[in-house]
Amino acid sequence: MNDKKLKKKYGKQYGYEVLFKNQPRQVVGKVGVIIGELGMPEEYEPEFYSRFMEHVFEYIMPPFLVGMILADRGMGLVDPENPLAREPFQPRQLIDSNGSFVNKAGKPYVECPVKWVNPIKKNPWDHGYFLYKGDGPSGRPDVCDKVGAKIIGWYYGHLLPEKKVAWRSQLRKVYEEAVAELAKRFPGTEFRNAYYMYPETIHQAVEELLAAGCETIVYQNINNPIYCDFEDYGYALVTAHEAVAGRARVIMADQLGNQPSLREAYLQILRDRLAGLERNASVLVILSRHGHPFKKETQDERAPLYRGPLEAGVRQVMAGWPGKWEVVWSFDEYADEYWDPKRTKFGTYDAYRKAIEEGYDYAIELPTEFPAENTDLMIFHAMKKFCAFAEYDRNAPIPYPDWEQPLVRTFREGRTTGIYAGCPVGPYRKYVAQAVVDSLGQVLSAR
Image 1 (cartoon, one colour):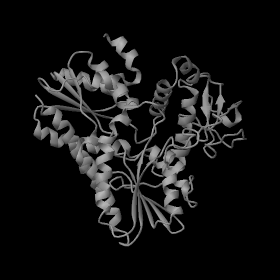
Image 2: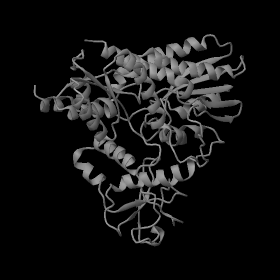
Image 3: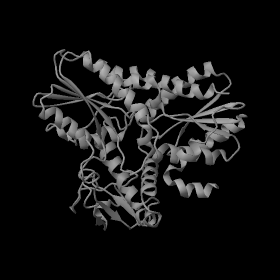
Image 4: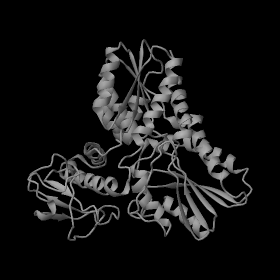
């Protein structure tokens, strides 16, 4: 069966069913390794958020609608003091996705003719924006402009005091520590870092590895313990194959969640959080995950390889806890009435409310699908789940000055203290790096 027919047969699962399942199992010749991740930058880059949103719409929408949704009619603007507005209002100021409050002529947008564009009415998490057409198309879709404007104006402009996000920096350290160990174990192997939301970095890494004489190129994604079609099999892996174009053998190392060392990172975080509590306290452990809206996703098929052993490990840790305890899984995203009208999914908001309403002393959340902090965890997911606590203020800045420590956040209501335990960074990074070493080591040893 030719490639075109295979793509039609498997659709969004093509990368997993064809490229991953049928890939070679052994390396040959000199080996080059690409360790990839999403690539969320420290400082705001409009191109990143535009590319990500374009990928979202191109992935989820029928092709005949994509052109309409991703239309570039002008510049999408938001008021950073009211970024989540769903109804028309008189803005005090307007910012664009480049971080400018003025048009090309230097005139404030708020003084220019603009048109209000409504959000998706049924989606409570969508927001409207103002469209300015005076300077023609912006070079990016209007819907991407509005997201970028919100992020530069509200996230970076107000919510993030350091005006930086730790994601890329924290994962770069994982890369460096893993490569240092792998280089000792597999001398002569070439290593490169790449960001799949910037496909050109994968192409550049491939060209450099081929120029270095590599006959096998191994790709490892490190930003999600469970591979998915949306980012890994159907996007990063496909990009790697397109870049190589048959000039070398391509092997994708398996998801990091298969490695016990990665699971140990979260178990150690839990142990450390418990160490600071009264021994007779009641504890609800929340294992949160991102979630997705798709009817079929390879992630669901392969998630048990990670989640089953992780939950077993958590229960083993809690078995020695003298107070009352319980373990639940939750979804940060797609568990609300808009995405899940039949309410078949248990949201992280629901988990915190369970702890509050049942009178648990503590609710400890482990964000099990994130090896580093990003704007989703810090802001977007936070708005949806921490509102379970009356004291949570979505407009309050979120300081994170020390990236060598997890970002721990606490909230209290009634007798319950909610503890968001943060990601496995700093003292827990060694477990993540070891998972990369173990995962790639299995591939590099197979000759």
